[in-house]
Image (cartoon, rainbow, N blue to C red; front, side):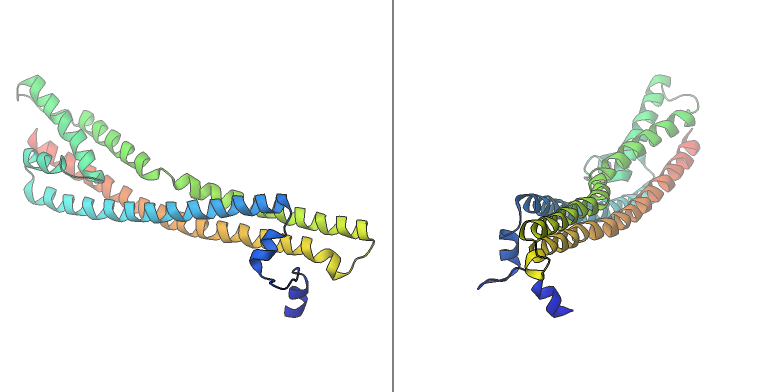
Length: 230
């Protein structure tokens, strides 16, 4: 089997994978280029989003500890204004702004409208979720599209093999090897781009779900404290 695979790859004095790419048809080169671009960008997204989610979770948990210890909204607001990549701090700002508006409009009298505060907190949460979801769609697209791009390259390589058979009127390995080699490389590159995208998309989605759960719990804690203040 190994010898058969080697026979399917065009041979030359410096025969290697690079030479195989150089000898490929223009369409095959375009397919491989697209797959390489998808792969590089998807890995960049994976690294960026992984670091972003880790920082967001770390900063949020630190802010949550401070929120639970202090419960002085004015002091917490000053800390929140200095926070970066901190979903809980951003949600707190929305809730505290609503409380300040209600207190200011009522001259510190009357009960707080918890429903309005809840809506403000949810609005802040939705904004943060949308921010954290950015670029994840590219991984989903990569996982879905690249196998089909690789399949196109596979079909194109096999078509070239049949065309060579028709031109040379000969079906030996030397005739069909270049096209089949292109097909195999396109298939492998399609999977190479798609598989990591699928795996890390699901991992990042799980990390995002954890952050969403932290945000939902924070909203409930904020509302409980707000109810005591009203």
